[in-house]
Length: 170
Image (cartoon, rainbow, N blue to C red; front, side, top):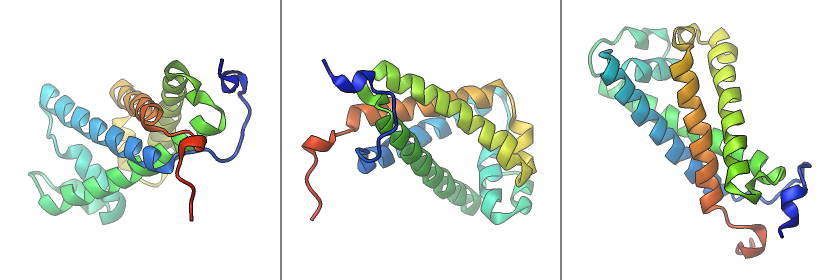
């Protein structure tokens, strides 16, 4: 039996950073697709969330775009993917440090907790600096962040190579 299963203490190292980046990127892509589908289902502008994300860098003027705006959507994609990769790496560091990668259930539970924390950070903490995100608070944004966290966790768990199987750095 894997002794890591019963070791919930912090240990540095052991994170597979490539798997973490891929997991964050893939989970971010899933989140974006879900956001677009949800907007289409409820009949709202499918680009509103993209313009809110782009406004982080472009400023609040980006929120005034009504129709499809390629530069703003491209900027939103870059920001969204960079944040997805960064958050995927943070999640992977936590998962590997606390050995939540011992089995998929533990990884998904850690991802769900991370998704809730990320929701709180984005829509309550960061909304202090980017107040337009306050309008998105609610169960749909929480569910989307849960999906992101759980997807990133299970993708990382699936792709992760344990330290003993990695190619040593030169």
